[in-house]
Length: 118
Length: 115
Image 1 (cartoon, rainbow over the protein chains, first blue to last red):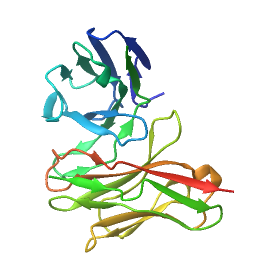
Image 2: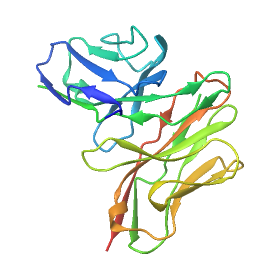
Image 3: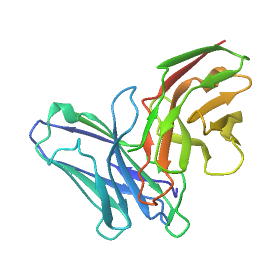
Image 4: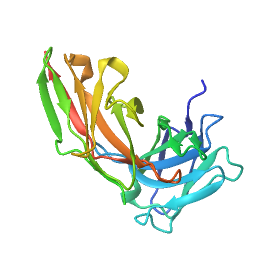
């Protein structure tokens, strides 16, 4: 399977614990996005990378959230000191952006990681 | 700043009838527009996109969408609905001036097709 892969698929954690999620994008894709989705709502933008550079982080995101893409391939999203309000589906997506042509292609999504904070 | 609005939380249509799911957007420069579908307990699946060219774009599963620059809209349409089209639909937009623009999603519209 050459699609976007996310691990784990499900995570249950106690409030106050740290969690880390991993995303492996489609291999030739240079852009990687993280979104958060709650039941019945649209994906909420968290952050995105172009290769290894983090281009933007949502102002709604607290300092407890951090993301990395150290070699421009896979990415990790860490949540420190989890709170019950962090319970959601965390989605990763990737796309290929051709800088010179300034053409954004569609993003392809993984199945997501469902986080439950108890 | 870019934004996208889906004014209807739910759309109900009888099978065989045409359907329309509405989307309006705001973005600096030329917009790139997308529609995605999400079935229960599944990830988001890409349906179609508008980048440039013909205002009517065709996508997967018989869906099409019409780009209207003057009304800043990108409504999703299908001539004849199927029960299997019942799902959550999301419109998304990114700006065209800068390749650094992120993709922003609407709040979603639940499409329900009754037999």
